[in-house]
Length: 316
Image 1 (cartoon, rainbow, N blue to C red):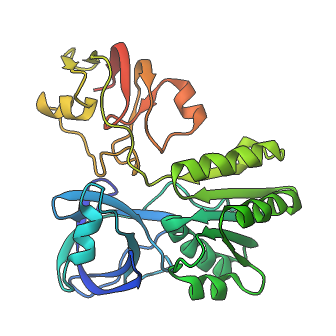
Image 2 (cartoon, rainbow, N blue to C red):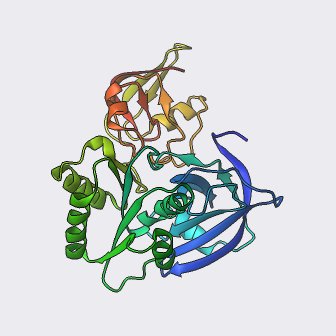
């Protein structure tokens, strides 16, 4: 098995609704064997009825005999989540090897986890890792008044006494967040997962409270902007080939149309599978994977959503 591409056929062994719009799915190897271990914060990409979506793994990653995910239903999305909400138990799906782009920093003195909506899912594995490795973690989750919060009992149990706080409504959340940001000891790292606007707001409040950018981490699961903008030219440095990328076509699609194969999964700039190194040119980034330093280097991109101005040179 490799770390790129869809590599494992897994069987849906169990599925259950834990809220009106969240379904837990348990995946097991078709041959009954164990599965590769994974770090807290890892995700897998699943084939979902013709789509490929990335989902956080929520169970303990130490020698697992299954993978567990929680799927939020998005009726206006690309269709993958709706398919998973309706697929019968026993169905076999293709699954990538676990990938971690959002793990807790091991040397951190303390970890503050902040989430909204389905953004709580990666933190289930964080809290399980905290128990195993002795990490100090505190979690704050926001939900509307009256909304059913999936995994609420698990979160309280895993976080321990006083380790998990649920804020109902924006006012209560802002007050709780401001206190949490002010009271953390030096060396604490902040992790945020949820809708884009929510994460932007939390990061802005952290910055206003004096948190260094290097201690703030986010994971996004929303779809990246659609390919679009100006046409540009991609030059394949090794072969000298020239590939024209139309304004309404992604670089990844243009390469594939030209017969150039490149691994890709979600095609939304979320999973990081299609990352390319050794690029040169004026790149416009629309992904949710690269750090600001990586973007500033001008040498890496995600061809599923990244674009360029004029000429882009690729190490292909």
